[in-house]
Length: 130
Image 1 (tube, rainbow, N blue to C red):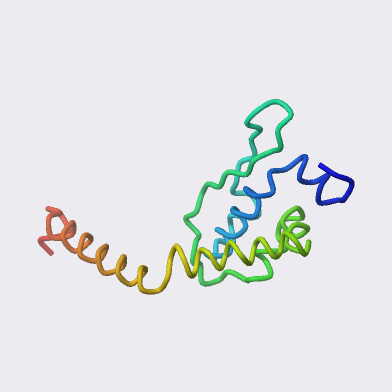
Image 2 (image 1 turned 45 degrees about the vertical axis):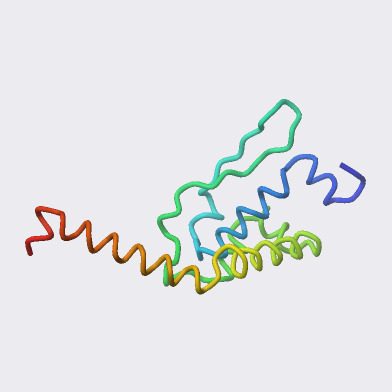
C-alpha cells in the first residue's frame, strides 16, 4: 500500500492487470473495451480487484477516437495520467509492438491465416462452390 495515492489505489486495484487491459485496448484500438467491457474480480478476500477483459469484437474499428480510448473511463483516465503508470503503459505497449507482435511476425501470421482461410473456404460446401 503506502501513503501515496498510487499506493492506496494499488491496495484496491491490481495495477498490473489494469495496465495490461489498457495496453491491450490501445494496441487493438478497441474503443468499446475501456468503457464497459471488462470484468473486475477479487481472487481472494482482501486482495486487490483484478481486471479481466471481454468483448473484443470492436477492435481495429475505424471510427475509434484515440481520446475516447483514454478518456471514456474515469479510472483509466486517472491511471494513464499518473507518471509511473503511464511509463508502465508505454513499456507494455513497446513490448507488444516490438517483442510479441513485430511486423515480421504479423506478416507471417497473416500469410499463414490467409492460407487456412482459403483452405476452409474451398472445403465449405456452401461457399467453396461459388
